[in-house]
Image (cartoon, rainbow, N blue to C red; front, side, top):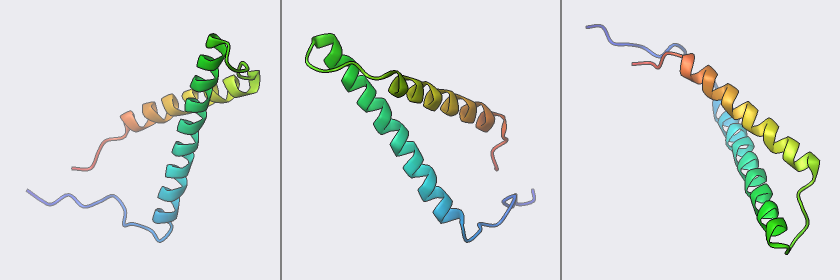
Length: 79
């Protein structure tokens, strides 16, 4: 059986792109955690409610993650 080669060789910018993706993912996670904390504080009466902009940003983050998940699910994985 022939060996399966990668579809492309790594490029010099791949490491920088991976760092950017990781930072974006960490920022989305931090926003989600912040929103959850604000919502809990509002329910307990110990803090202000989250703003509409914060809620909308988390909705956009969730939609982005779902879209990326769907795209990546359709991509065949290298063997």
